Length: 395
Length: 144
Image (cartoon, rainbow over all chains, first blue to last red; front, side, top):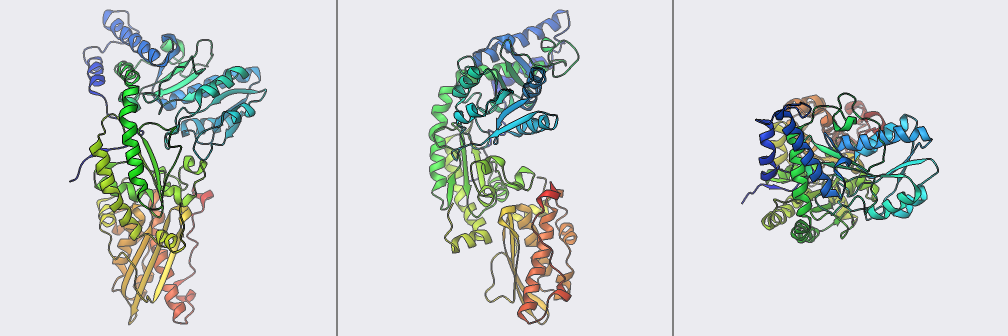
């Protein structure tokens, strides 16, 4: 029987009922401007203060180290542009990042390169994990910042953040991590892991779209990102998105308290899904099997193209993602899949399923019931599959 | 990707999928690196396309354009099949997103490649009839 299965929680998540309940009053009766002097405004100001404390607590940070933004991409842009603007005055114009970052980082670094900065893009291993020694070896006299994602958004691989943090601390360079996919999935302690700057996003953890945050370690100087009023301690102007900020605070509180439980629930589901899909011939798991997000499955299916796969899954009520060129909006398949050594052909046939809080064992059963038939159907009409069969090619 | 109902209908129920035994012409265009390959099989009788089948590796638009293109030439004289343009394919599908127009070009080219193969097998130089086949590989540098 047809079901609806949302298995794209790395793309976005449904707002949690508890989160929605705490945010709604701030859209109606609590509409005051937090900068206003009267009670209606002060209440909104206190609500933001409370949310800031919750976000900070979830990361092991102090409230004054949390700045609210409009999204993860803004946080990434601010961290890199804001830090490099300051550091370049001290002659530090070099940035270290990796080839498989989210585009919010990659395109920002590329833009900074056009503006006179230099960059090193570290490779990642076939397992989708950065080698901390590569970071150490890439640090130069003029290196200002190292930016490495906490967990990859496509293949879910978790990076050795604490080790990289220690290396950066020792070398005296700033360390930024895009933790958009990691928050709520992996315990984070910015002090213990020597993280100077950390980006996060609300809608990946059951808060609404349009709100994010940047953690900035006390003492790290960033240029103001939006000039204007004195909001966010004069660093990021614009009247605060009170309701969404309150929602983010609640979502962070829930996410941080439920991490172990979530991992314990999702990991076996993920494993069952991986084992089940790998029973289909000529398939491969992308990214390290152990060091990956509890809900992430990324598998390449030879001989089929990702977008077709997604459309067929959609017809069966399953929402998923792919790294095929057709879904990325460009002609090349996902840079992440190419970075771990996949050929274009195999990268075009990738499928990402990301499980979250609302997925059940029945969802896993249903995906495993539906997927083999879809693959069979697409392979039956695929001249590429025909050729691979003839030449005994494997993945 | 905002596909028309017609595209989705052809994608979910593609016409003329498969291969033909002893085809009179076979054409294959595209490549796996770019994510789409179309292969067309033709039977020709009395100057007409008496049967046509296709196999496609590619996105929803690639499968839908293959399907509708085979429908548009089946039973038609060769001359009509040669006149089938990619824009006619796009129109028949009630439009395609801009980034998918190249799929309709592939469909047109696949038919021409199959007819070119047909003439070659007949010992006739296809170029004066079919025209020169375009290089259907994507030019990554110019399209980005």
